Each structure stands twice: as structure tokens, then as C-alpha cells.
Length: 369
Image (tube, rainbow, N blue to C red; front, side):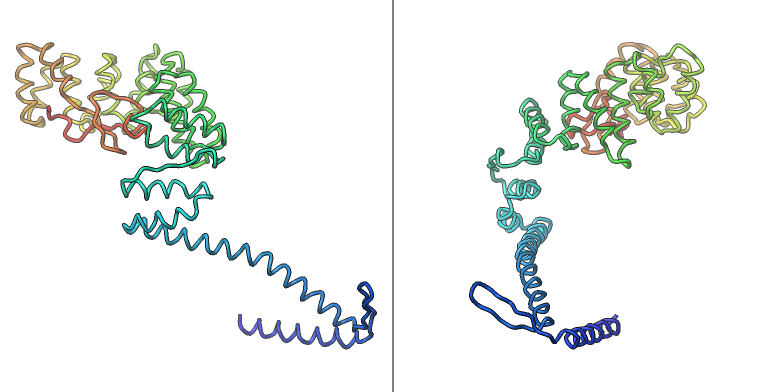
């Protein structure tokens, strides 16, 4: 590489000398009353230098500003991630004209336990409103909804705001709005995320339109919510196919529990459970056998159960219905794999972190509180 640079430099010098030799003749340059005789090669050289200096000054100043911006951002990030939020706040505060930096500034302020005060009209991308809305989702849903709608009014391409707003519409009972917005999210999502967004759409359709959306649900990825709807189809062959798919997708425990709580178990599901008994958690088997009255199966399952459920299994023989209802009401069966929030019944949306399709069978769900 150095050799090539030396060769290039030597060639450039030779070219310059040759150019000067062939352009020794002078030309008159006039400016108002001043007149000068200059060699052509010198005039070209001066023009080149002036143009270079002008472009260097104009771009150099901008480059210096960006370097300083980048250095402050680097220092702020380093301080924030290494436990010095006050230093980070100081660096980020100098960069607040860039809306993209505001969430980092808010993070630093929150770590310091300080109130964040920002003039929202100053920003045009909707990033600030979205970040504030994230922190209000659980406490002030209406305020978060208002902020997210304003964020989208400023910048419709803000997919984060749209995703959060879908969840708010869902919990607020505005199902049609949630569906319409999620369809737009799917169409605009990046290709690697489209499968995840289609799963959200699938769960939304199942929860909002139910059996009316069966035709569309067949074309979408299978989720716990959509499986429960598809298992209600009239055609036995279709139900059997879906019952097999829930094991392939590894959502069988959640689907079975959800069906039990809905009182919607089908013979196809029970048969599929019997064929794949080793894949089903003992608490799920316990509740399924209790639900359908297969009490003789409980005895073979007894040794796999926690101690407190063994006693419940014994009581089922004397007062089946009452004992079973009491048990269901006490068990926290589900847990969000994203934030750890526990639930008694299944929901496609965790209302604690607003993530979709994250509820799983809780580890230790067989233990009564």
C-alpha cells in the first residue's frame, strides 16, 4: 500500500512538471483596474488550491461538529452503561437538539430519580412521545394512548408507536382499531420481524373475531389463541390436524390449559394428549383428567404431582366439582417469559410489558398460593 502511494505521488509530480513545462506561456488576468500576467500553469494551480481550501473549510467545519457530536455521544453512552448516569446526563443534555438522543437522556434522568421535563413541540419525529408513553402504559393508559396518537401524527413511520398503540387499543376494547393498525404494522415491518407481527395479527383475530376469522387464521402462523379457535371447527379432520400442530409448535401445554379454562376441550385434543403424554406437563394432565372426568388416570399420575396436589387428587373422589373449581381459582398457571408477570388465565398480551404471545406455562404452576 505504501509503495502504491509513493508511485502515485511520483507520477503526480511528474504530471505537474510536464503540465507546467507545456503551459509556460502567460495569460492576462484582470480584476477591476488591476491587471496581471500569469503563466497558465500557475493560474490553474491557484484555482485548484482556492477550490480545495474552500471545500475543505466548508466540509471541515461540519465534520468537526459531527466529530464533537459523536464524541459526546460516545462518552455519554459509556458513562450510562458503566454506572455513571449523572455524567451521562451532562453529555446527553448538550445533544438534546437531536431527538434520537432524548430517550438516552430520559434513561439517565430516571436512574438518578429525577423528573424529566421536555418541550414536546420542539421535536417532530414522535420519538419523545413514544418514549414517555412506554413509561405510562400501565399507570396512565389514556395519556399513553394520546401521546402515541400524537407521535404517529408527527411521523406515521414510527413502528414502535404503532405496536404499542395496538396493545392499548386491545386492552381498551377497541378491537377493530387494533386489527386495522396491526395489519399496517405487518405490511410495513422489516422482513425478519414479519413472522412475529403475523403471530400478533393471528392472536388478535382469534380474540376479536373468533370463529368468523377461521378462514384467515388458517393462513396465519399458529398461536395459542388461534389454536383455540381453530379447534372449534366443525370438521373433525381439521380439528385433528390442529391438535397435532400444537405439539409441533410446542404450545400444547398453554393451548390445553386455555381450552380447559374455556370449557372447550375436544375429543381430538384428548386423544392427541394420550398419544403424546410424555410431552405434557403433569399439572396440565392433572387438570385435563379432572376436567373430563378421567379420574382413573389420576392414580397413575399421582406420583408425578407435587404433595399439595396429591391431597387435592384424593379429595376429588368425594367432592369432584367443588374441589376442582377451588383448585383452578387458586393456581397461577401462566407467566410472561419477557417480564415474569404471573397470570391465572391465558391472554395473548401481557398487560405488564405489552409484549404479545409471551405467556407460558409457569414453572411450578402446580403449587397453590
